[in-house]
Amino acid sequence: MKRGKRYAEAAKNVDRSVQYEAADAIALVKKTAVAKFDETIEAHIRTGCDGRHADQQIRGAVVLPHGTGKVVRILVFAKGAKADEAEAAGANYVGAEELIPKIQNEGWLDFDVVVATPDMMGVVGRLGRILGPKGLMPNPKAGTVTMDITKAINDIKAGKIEYRLDKTNIIHVPIGKASFTEDKLADNFQTLMDAIIKARPSALKGTFLKSVTLTSTMGPGVKLNVAKLLS
Image (cartoon, rainbow, N blue to C red):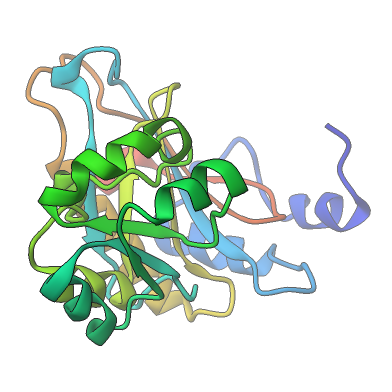
């Protein structure tokens, strides 16, 4: 993959042979985020899990103390009083069956998170093929299938992120923006890692965290010292 001059210059700051401590990695990722927009800082966590086995799956959510820096658009599937509650709590879009053709036929996907009351999951399930691959399917473990709509919306607006294994058993999550202070990024990263370490499947034998890399949207990856993260 061909990279631009800006990336090449930024990459010179990163020693590929070194596994950095978290604070140094965060400082380095901020330094190498030189794009003309406020880049997202992401953590990429390669695990020793085998997601093909149900007892080695990892999926959950955590509220980052300083948020992600992104304005999140929330769609809620609910009816009656719960729909009114969703609107009052600040959901961007609220609806029921009438949204199915809009998403299925018109390709409408102007939202970042989907929340649903349990009674609406039969309806939402019809969108599985569209929402599933995009990581948008509501899930009880992530707190997005719930009767407590207000709490779900408040948590998401406060910086709640969902983490899950992809097909290669890697977890990809944002921990903030390049404009955040190092302290805020460090707080968010530590909160995320505490949740991931706690989520280690009991069925897993062998190494859980194989590698942890921090990167900005356009910048080079910075590898962390996993042993230090676990100590």
